[in-house]
Each structure stands twice: as structure tokens, then as C-alpha cells.
Length: 429
Ligand code: HSE
Image 1: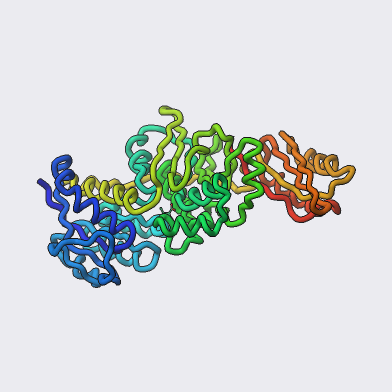
Image 2 (image 1 turned 45 degrees about the vertical axis):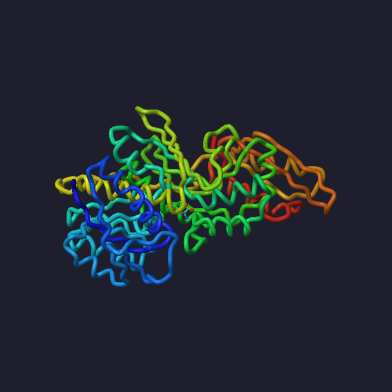
């Protein structure tokens, strides 16, 4: 039996889940893997408030992480603090102390990738980060191991449980945004600062991590294009539903034929038959297109205490299994340096909603502008309204270049019969 001493730093939602699995499944893990995980410390700034699961007396609870760092029997520090402040310091000190790290901290890995992985390579230790993307879905292992021999060309994912939960509740139960967010917070899906979820930033962190692994091309997080769901209007969810589309927050990492990469996150309309359209509540799913396997889909709970804790446990076991083999620490080398495609060059289909006066010449005026920008209209719906003199005019387009769509929207906004800027949502076929 390989004994592995661990310290848990951050006794919050996920930390509690880790303790719960350890307490109930320690023997199962030993029998299955030959690894005996010995939790020696739980470190948190608050060790007084009772959690739903509490450790027995063999675990030392402390507010001082240095105690764990100094203990030679601790081989893995589990960082579940979150954020990029103290968490970065902890990870750096852990690696420098010659210990391994397991973390679910996507913000840290996406925003400080060069520092964290640079140091990891220098010291030759392991960072397990399965829990950082898509909760319990083993997607990091899939991209780095299962598909290591394949050429990944695109990856489309619902990678934020909170926003998927909100969008599901809004579209299926007509729940208002605030109530749905409150529920997601109560269920332990949301970030401590939920603007990371609703602003799309959490999904962008995950796409930065997955895309970097998929294309062996670290793209600075700042270059991921992000739009959140904060400005999504229920009106568009309803109109789109009538047209057979479902709205999701989708993260995309793609490489095109010219070897330019797209890393983006934005609200996206999916045809209702698309597999990702069926993903509800806090569930996540990632669809991968690769040359030899073809299309594959990975699905499961993407947020919450227990699902994320399973991924953290998997990393601890994986490091425990390979403690005698330090070469296990994979050193990614020879990174590709693909340029990031500017958003203006991205091509997509689009849903557009204008608020226009119901008068002669409106449709021809708008379609004239579209043809100037080589935008081909795929469908048009005009809804009658008895309130006010403006009506919603909804169009979908065939594939068009984003810069052309934006120019057309700007022109249309200035037309005298237009009321405000048109709403634009990208459609994924
Ligand atoms: N806030 C995140 C989400 C937690 O909702 O997906 C899991 O990373």
C-alpha cells in the first residue's frame, strides 16, 4: 500500500466534499488503487464554524498553512482556496517545498499559467487540476491522455454550471434572473463572486485551460473573447425558442485551416436538436472534434461540492499511484505559437433583433445594408405589437463575417426608423 500524506487548504464547498469522500471511501480507494490517503491537516481561516462533514481527531485543524508545508509526511497540498492572491503564493511555496499540488482553481491556472506551470517544470513536481474544468467530468484527462494521439480541431462546451442553471430556469420555468442566480448560489454552484459566472469569465478561464491543452498552445487569458449572460433578455430566449433554438453560454476553442486559434465564450443559440442544447441545470458538456476519433461528447455535473470533489480525489490518487516515479510529472514542451484570430474575422450564423417602426421601406432598407456587407438573410419574422409604434423584427443570417455584421448593425442603428442598436446572438450549427 502506498501511503500518501495530504493537507487540505480551504475548507469550503469543495473541501467539505473531499473530506466526505475520503471518510466514506478510504477503504474502497485502498482496495481499488493501492493508495492510502492520509489526511493530516485541514487549513482554513475559519476552523470554528461547523461544516456538514467534520474530520475525526486524527486530522489537525489549523489556520497556519506553514505547519503543513513543513511536515515531511505531507506530499500533496490540496489548494481549494480559490482566487489568484493567496492561492498563488500557496502553490508557489508548495512547489518550492518539493511537494505536489492538487487544485480546482481555474482562475489561478488560466491567469497565472506561465508562473505556475513554469515553476512546476522547474521543480519537477505534479499539479493535478482535473477539478478546475467542468467539475466531475474527467475532461483534463480526456484531452491530455485519451486524445493525446489525436489532432483536436475544435472543442465546444457548456463549462459553467451556474449560468447553465440560470438559463435553464429562465427558459423552462420563466424564472427571473435574480431568483435563478440566488438558487445557484444556495446550491453551491456559483463562485464567491458570481460576476465571474454571469460575466462569462469563469467559462473563459476554463476555455483558456482546455484550449491550451487541446492545441498545446497557451493563449493568454486576456486574449479569450468574453461575453456573459448578464445582458441576455428573456424576450430573445422566447423568440429563439419559437424558431427552434435554445440559448446557452458556450465556450469555443477552435483551430482553423490557416492554424489560427479562436478562444471565445458568449451566449449562443443552438438548434434544439444539437446535443449541447439538451444539457440542463448545472450539468456541463464538452463536445470535441478530433481528426481520428471524430466527434465525442463528455457530460456530467459541472459544479457543486461532491462532483468537483471526485475530480480532486482522482488527482490525489493519480499522484499517489506514481509517487515512486517522479518522471510522471509531464513537462509540456515545444509549445505551438498559433496566432489568435481576431473576433472580426470569426464567421458564424447570427440571430438579430431590431426594434423598428412598422412602416414602408424598413425591410428593404435593412436588407439593402446587409447585401452591401455580403450578409445573406436566412429567415425573417416580424412580430405585431399593440403597444407603441415600434415592432420587433427578427432575422437570422447565413454564415457571415463578424466584422460585417457589426458594421451593418452600426448602419442600421442610425436609420431614422430604428430604435436603438440591434441585438446580436451567434448561432452554432
Ligand atoms: N462556478 C462554477 C460553475 C463552479 O458554476 O461552473 C465550477 O467550476
